[in-house]
Length: 516
Image 1 (cartoon, rainbow, N blue to C red):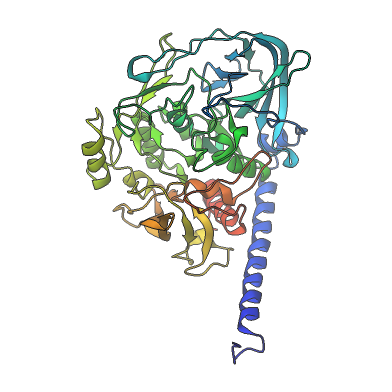
Image 2 (cartoon, rainbow, N blue to C red; image 1 turned 90 degrees about the vertical axis):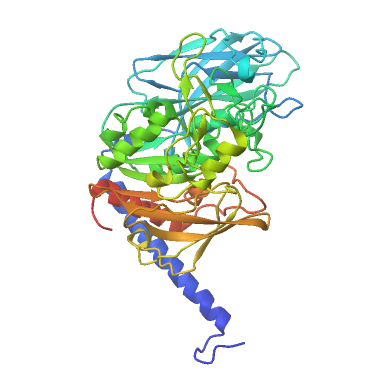
């Protein structure tokens, strides 16, 4: 049917209107990106990404055992979650059967679209078959393997996420096999943006060696029963059956599927970004030197000291961007390893949420827990809800808000599939808090739950934004080595100029403290 007031058929008219809106958004995005790049011309990130990228850094030949978790043919882990220049880190490697191997170490970034830069190669080195630990108290698996090599961090290694590729050197007639290791190089410089990787959550879900995570204790999947150690390899990405089906994640935690698209995009546009692990946020000192703090991806497990640190940062004027979902869900106390290394063992100590119903119910159904965290909504703006997982479209409710400048969006416009794997809802009672997007997430068409993206002002002209979805980064970029995740028969579509422009707007306001 034609629209009588228009010389064009209605469908063609709407199509043309949408195309015009998208062209306008793309033009605004280009202007914003150009301005950001020019402003950051002297950034160490810009200088780093001008260096040659690697053509070959991904895993090529991957083999996992019959259970689908580990790669005993070659696997390894690092002695620390993060390290700074001038320090060293040990890498523990096991091969079954014993083999020589080589390690290529890459810094992850943009690098002209290649996604990584080779910083150093090691080998050939010798690897023995190191023992699989027997389950300890609370099903703890702590490897205590011998070190295969020690890496001294030189002065010119910029803060970032560093992924190593372990490759066996085959004997005659054999195939080679590969897996990853991962760690963060941190620094202490004043930076515009602090990017916190969600490695506590990587470890909580890590099923190495054979389905042993905080979710697999016989007493229950949601209680405080299991301990997990960072002294073990990361198995294949723990959500692979339901969210990410990509064996190339073996050894790299959840960085590649959920966090790399943000790091790649930030470095592509020259943002001055520094990186840290969850365990680096036990005091607010690092964050107070930055203008913006980003929680990314699946950021579920926080030591209570992390919560207190980020709360202090907000109160002191740091802008907080929760480009994440299911964030600050479980109190996760750290303790030292059996060898005395700090912050190497953790467990699910209890729910965040204070007296909110989702916390009270979890405590009653899955406890008793030794801890109850404060209401996370009073920090992040919205809360963990039940059900907390599902998929949906990210629907705009307040298009006049400054975060949408240059996007051309209207009330009810949607970004398909951007909500998932888990999300936030139930906005907190904070004066001036605004719901900028919201809608319904579904578990394969059932169990509907409302989600809400929120923003509120901090006490010193800063702000706290909550995108309310693990999948936000999927709308920014699709770097090499990345596979789009999915959730409950719903999936994001990849880069979207509206997500990119919203993120530029947020970062411009955070960094320049100017209205956009």
